[in-house]
Length: 139
Length: 139
Image (cartoon, rainbow over all chains, first blue to last red; front, side, top):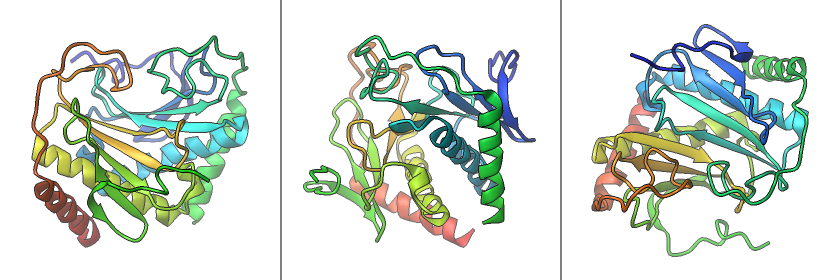
């Protein structure tokens, strides 16, 4: 088996626990583009148990909350596709009306040369993810 | 306000409750393409309370389970985008290796004339969604 998400290396990990990790993607058009990757090699959300689903989705939504807080995007895009790499992972993408593809999905046709933006500080994103996960647990 | 998901009409509703609905989309290339639409006009998952998030995601995953059971797709694609219509809704899309865009997202570039497939019977999909939601509640 030759799965790039099983054999991951050189990732920028913002947060991780025993079952999944949040990584920051190096994508010049999309600063702040994160992926939440389930550690086990399964393809679909409904391959997980109910408590695993809940945990993964809590991490996805904590990542959404962190990106909204740190970057104030115009929209968040969430997607679990996995057609090319059928290893469960979520895209969490901060979108801006002046980015390269808006209002198309980032997989659609390019609309313009996207406005330039800086990648937020890693520590700030990690801190915001941890803060939201802590709130979830407290709630 | 002129939101097409608030002013919905002519939808094929597979299932609904007081907070959301599952609709079957008329998309010839993608039989079984469903959308799960939150009734309230909010833009993001993190605009919902924790229990609302959990409920909506349970319905999304029940739709995924029903589509897998009835259609046996090669992959499921899940996405919450809302760049054009910022009213919270999820795409739940059964994908086949011989469909029009595989392995691209359905928003990507066309790869071929997609194989023809029939839309599954509505009653069968509804029954499968209800069965999964009932299991979730029992679990």
